[in-house]
Image (cartoon, rainbow, N blue to C red; front, top):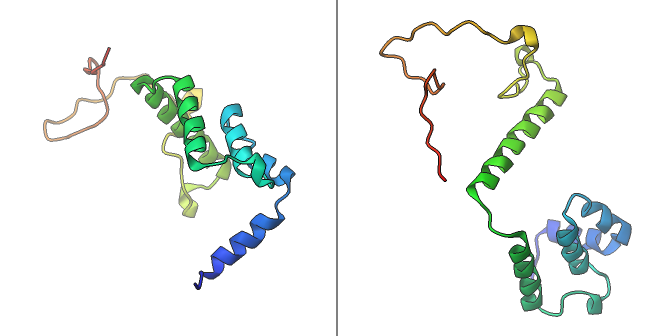
Length: 140
């Protein structure tokens, strides 16, 4: 069986990872997920999950402990990702006139925030910007 070159390279790299490398890779994970990750990558086979079914059981148990994933939590995650993404884009400090990427929601200084009302729009103009008295649907 002939494997693509990147597979052999990946296997060789995995063989030289130290326990410290694995722990550094798992740094951003939650404590419970980090323990699963570290157990999956143990050097000694006896320390790993004995079967895929045992791993599945562990992961399902963790899902139960987390509780239901609500719509409100999903919205919070998306908002956080957009905010962090905007901050990351700002850190790149690429200017629009230089052909760079600009954050979708740039931070405004206090002086740049408009307080006067928007001009009236024509009947032909379609906007996605909510106006005064915009209706918002909510689920309870």
